[in-house]
Amino acid sequence: MRPRPATTTSSCRGLSNNVSGLHLLTIEEAARRLAARETSSLELTEACLSEIERTDGEIGSFLEVTADLARKQAKKADARIAAGKDIAPLTGVPIALKDLFITEGVRTTCASKILHNFVPTYQGTVAGRLADAGAVLVGKANMDEFAMGSSCENSALGRTSNPWNTAYVPGGSSGGSASAVAARQALGSYGTDTGGSIRLPASFCGVVGLKPTYGRVSRYGVIAFASSLDQVGPFATSIRGAAALLGAVAGHDPRDSTSIDTPVPDYTSGLGSDLKGVRVGVPKEYFIEGLEPDVEARVREALAKLEELGAELVQVSLPHTEYAVATYYIVATAEASSNLGRYDGVRFGLRTGEEQGLAAMYGRTRDQGFGDEVKRRIMLGTYALSAGYYDAYYLKAMKVRTLIRRDFIQAFERCDVIASPTGATTAFKFGERSGDPLAMYLTDVLTISTNLAGLPGMSQPCGFDSEGMPVGLQLIGKPLDEQMLFKVGAAFEDATDFHTKIPTSVAA
View 1 (cartoon, rainbow, N blue to C red):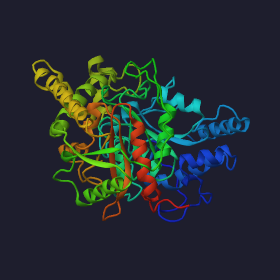
View 2: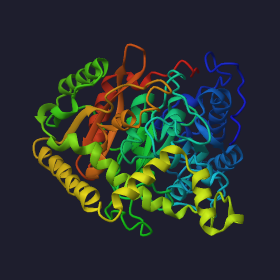
View 3: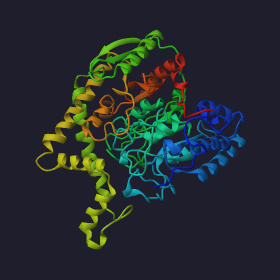
View 4: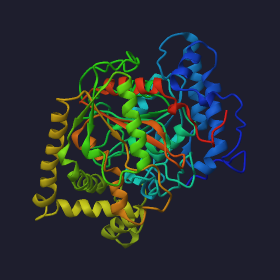
């Protein structure tokens, strides 16, 4: 495990030594200043690295801080800008990657002991496209091991805290990616979303997080959890920043057989404040028993604001929502059981017990290399796929998955976008649910259906609860209609100031 970067203060609270304040810029603000030569990428990168050094000892967003690489990339970006050619929206912008993105020459662990020393010899598509765009990688972010979790408590390599209150979880599995952006340690980041793993941390940490349509972003070079559900997406402090991040990595990739071959629009265009004619569906099944009163109140207020901006609110129904959690935890664990079979201690990663024979080496390596939650899901998935149980569990789950997708198709006949809470609660304290797997699994009850249906979904901040923790508004769109999510989200953002609020751990 990498030691946490040393801090310049004894606490995360208080004023920053980083007097430049460049780490507080949104991506679009940074891009404008870089293009105008008002600041340099190296200055911007140093500001973020300084903030990581100051705060990450307490927050723990990063498993690997790539300071030397970041400075090298920043200098290259400055030369590119000075030459005035090949400048992209992310050229010179510091970003972080969840530690399941394959990055050539940079340790990639999936927050697991079984991959603790794995250094890839090739570049994944997302990392490659970001490098081509001139983005600056400041580090690899912590996560739940193999992306299995809703709180970031399952990492085998360290703990990540919520920047708004370090006694609380940041959400999972992309907790480090969300906390890095919330703490302004990076201007943007990328995670993956299998059942809510971008949107839930975005909600808990008060930032924007988007799960695109399945197949919109290549998964080549993304260490798999559940291949029919996983999708790459961005985190940012603004809607326009998230739009720029998505545009940088979206598009067809022949190396990913599930990649959609369709043109990528300019997601940053046409983001005004007029929602006249936009129909916003409100699903009755998402305002459920157990929804925290503060969460419901903030989301209801957000819906009223959308109506005030010209949108029409319409009631819709997603009747098979009640089966989503059970369906997801059959499909996801079955695919995890298959995908994680490759980690046997032979080709890469941890190897133990080889002196006792091949079978013992397999068993000991997997026993010592995987954490409890990963083992639990492998066993659940293996059981669901085993002879005599496949029809009763996996096949039936796939049929229900079809019904869930059909619910959305019918709902979108009445609306252009669906709005709901992202989570039933705000962030919870460490240990509050970790001893009860079922309670933890229910954390994703409002996000899972979007993955099962392959639809785009986004969370953006819409207020705070009585304890000062962020509340997220979830927007769900039609297939490949991320533009509608950005349009509605930008209108709400322009009319409110929730996205401008920062944790007390962050100071200019």
